[in-house]
Structures are given as C-alpha cells and as structure tokens.
Image (tube, rainbow, N blue to C red; front, side, top):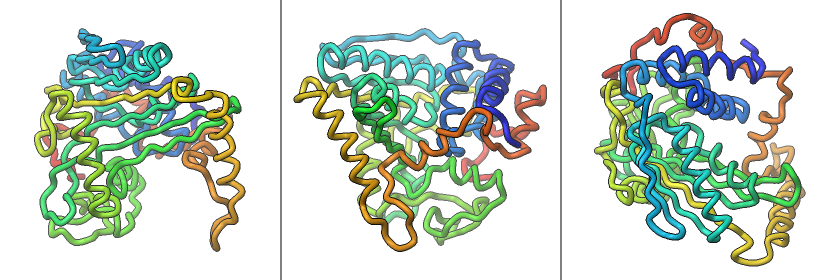
Length: 350
C-alpha cells in the first residue's frame, strides 16, 4: 500500500491517540516513525505502531508523565522521564542539549526511565540542522549473544551520529545497531514473510538461520568489536544513568503494563568552540563530495557517504509516498487498538 507521508502520519497519530496518548506526543511519535519510513528504516516505522499502542493502552507508557529536569553542571543535564513515551522525551532532551551546546560548546544530556525511542538518527539530525554535531546512544533489551557466548546478554544498543556540511541539505549521518542487524529488521522481514541472510542471527541451537521466525538471538557486528561497542553503549546510557543494564534491561514484551526504565544519552558538540566553524562545515561538504568521487569497486555504481543512501529514499516527494505492507495498513485504518497481543511473549516469538 502506498501512502503519502502526510496520510501515514495522520493514521499513526490517530492510532496512538486511540490508544490513549495525548495528541502532542502522538504527533511527535508519528514524526519519528514517518521519518524512519521515509529513510528506508522500515524496521522502526509503521511496523512498530501496534506494539506501542498496546503498551500505551495497558499502562506500560505513562500518558500523563511528569518530567524531572535536573541541570547537573554547565554542560550536563539529566531528565527523568517517568516512563513516558520515549520519542517525545528524547526529543526534549536533544532540544536541551542543543541549547546548552550553543552556549557552552558541549552538552551531555542523559534521559532516564523512558520507553523505546525509535530511530535515534532523528535526534542527531536535529543537532546537525542547527549546525552542531549530534551523537545519540540508547539501550535495548537483551537479545544478543556476546562474542564467544551462547546466551543473550546485551541488546542491539544503537549508535547514531550526524554532522552538518556547508550546504543547506549537506549532512553526514549514520544510525546503526551494534548487531549485524537491528531486531526491527527481523520484524520487517517477518511482516513481508521474507528470509534473512544467515549472518544476522542464530536459532535456539546457536546455529545460523535464514528463517526470521526461527531467530532466538542476534549476532554482534564484527565479532568482538561489535561486542565492545554494545558494552560501551550500555555503560553510557544505562550504568551511567542509574537504570537497569546488561541482562537486567527490561524486555519489550515481558509485561506491557509496566514501564521499561530505559536510558538514552545525547552528546552535542558545537564546532565553533573547537576551531573555525565555517571551515568545519566546508570540510564536511568536501568529505561528502570526495567520497562520491572515489572510483567505485566492481558491482557498485558510486561510493556513497554515510546516510546518503537513506537520504535518497527520504528525498521522495510526498506524492510518491511511502510503501507499507497491506496488513499494517489494514490495522492502521481499523478501529482496533491492537490485534495480535504482544504481552508476555518471548521477544523472539512470532
């Protein structure tokens, strides 16, 4: 089903409001989800709406949350989110970080006790659009075997980074799980009933699988290197903020009536405090151009700078719209808050 971004935004926001979320928060969540769809990150788009709606309706996301904002230093701030919706509260955290970085050069903002915050490059791009460097890290529930291990411990623990260039639309961005693929990619393949590469995940026996429904654990990128990165993310967005960490991070599906107590960290850097800002912006644009100009390897048409491939899809006109699977569309236009209950399911179950 092909929808304009505006149509998809309205459908998602309406569904989240039906579940009980206030319009202002539903609109922000819809912004982030449509952003993900538009950039081709379908794993963090409309496929997630039913899950969010069920958790909201069962009280696992605080609708009338009260934020505790504590400025702990000239460049640091911690927000306690009262287990409210992760995306709107993470956005508030980035807004605070941008404000501080403009004044002080650097900002580190911890956001604790929130729900899932979605495609986190949405937040780093907020910083880049203000001429700043943005970095975001957040926890995820345990579903990854550590290098050399046979049991899950860490989550997919993503990292996002954005840096602005000279031109209005010049920007380098990457948003990556520290696993070979994010769990949402498995969900996306399930919704399309498509196989996965045998390098993404393992089954209950620890053997590689191409069946998305047989997945029982994900694999870290580059073995011990990805394992180290996911540990770093867990320490900075979990241990540092005093929320559950490692294998104690709550499962998405364990109990949808309870808050998840997740942690998220934003780091924002103002280039003007470290040198000539104009030269920095020019250098980023030069980097983008030079990467594009590199001779491509056999089988490739062009070398793309990080984020460029996603940007191509994001650049589609609203008339061209966004493609979503028919089952998700049927759910979005229905009057049901949720159809297939996620509550207390094994995170790897169908």
